[in-house]
Image (cartoon, rainbow, N blue to C red; front, side, top):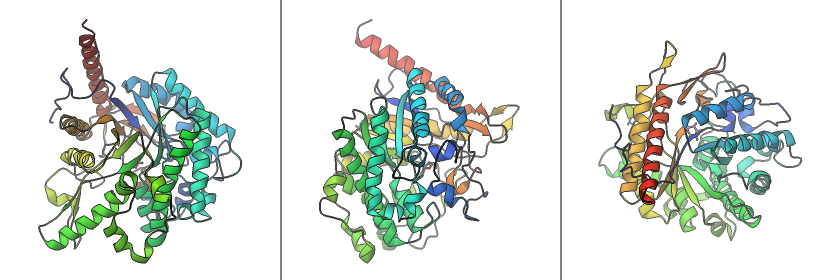
Length: 457
Ligand code: FCB
């Protein structure tokens, strides 16, 4: 296993670099219909036969709704600076509009206060995919009305806990929502329409910009931004067809989001490709989308190799492949961060998700997940390399704290650095968690040493 060079006092990470772990509401909370929570599109989607690999759902998940306190102790024990979690919109405003659910708001308030009491910074995501089902009945993200409901929701949550939350992320991975949810239909809400997907993407971006403006107007001091899933794309061969396809796919997955957020326009080649399916844009929308952010969050798991005839398979490359079938390619993270830094006027960036699913085996109460540890260590090293080459990075968060409901893959894929026995809800730290804890201790020691040097002690 290659050990990272980031342990010593010459660590390239700035003293205020934020180390964390991440989760999301639907994937861990359970309590799907408790204390006044309304149904989300994922509650409904999971009921369709055949859409989730193991026919499961998030009804129970990791039962975090009831175990939040011991989970916070677990997080504290890791020695992280921050915990990234999401609020379930239908838990706090069950119908997406109308009455608020006090019990739901109380839950997140307890969570935020519990984090602060343990010295952990709360990083709150507003939309990690679980849209209130009632809004989907009117078209969901494809309906412009949802934009305004989202802004109300964001304002309500921020009014309640904005002064205590370090950072708000508006949306997690709008590409996944629009493309997998409204185009391919393999994620909730399971719609298959190019036009609806394009419109949903536009509305997600628009609601992001409007929410930023609303939160700032109400005096919210937390850092505000969005989280995108981005990957470098490379052609499988030197053929012209592969190059053209790569350029287009880069447009659809990277530039379609980065250009409007940082340049105020959609990429012309993608608009042309969409033709009549291109989204309806109202004058003023693009300027709203480009509202200045305090941070950009990047989720990185792998690179993508593009072939015009779709013959390429991650197993062909010779690199290790995770249980998701994703190639392990840490260099891609350095490449990606450098590209974003060079091509766009980006604010400080965070890796908001990075991690890997592998098959784990309990061995006398221990999980020796060497591959996951190696994956995380090598990606941290990739971030270090980006920093050495001039990229402003403010944080790194492991996906995920816990094994959890991995969307259409159900519970079959385990991303946690903490193992969850779903029968007993017992949590066991995997070797990767022990490694991360140890790594963070050394980082903290390096920090202390540096600040002592800085003040001449
Ligand atoms: C990301 C999601 C996250 C998790 C990881 C594996 O796309 O944001 O919820 O499912 O992938």
